Amino acid sequence: MPQYNGLIMSVVFVAVFYFLLIRPQQKREKELKEMRSSLKVGDEIVTIGGLLGKISKIDEEYVTIEVGNDKTKICVEKWGIARIKNK
Image (cartoon, rainbow, N blue to C red):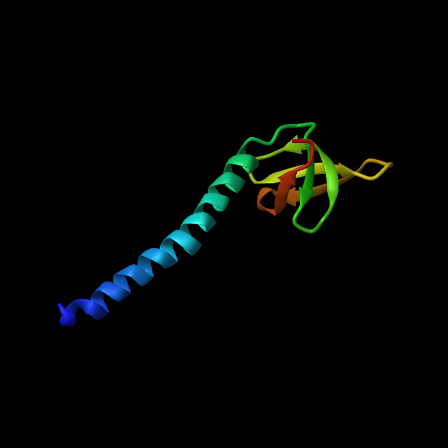
């Protein structure tokens, strides 16, 4: 049994590392991907840069948002959207 102590400790270390770091990160990435695929016109969003705006047009990879009182339109990539504000 003593010759397997190192192997057992390595397996336990990898399992703990997986359940504490890798799995939660994969879950967050999956939730972000689902959120970005469910975007629709009219949603209020926040970009990763901190811009707040309302979606006016959606393409396959890009989203056009209106920001400010004068409705300035800005085109951002979908991966740049951090969250939906009105949900």
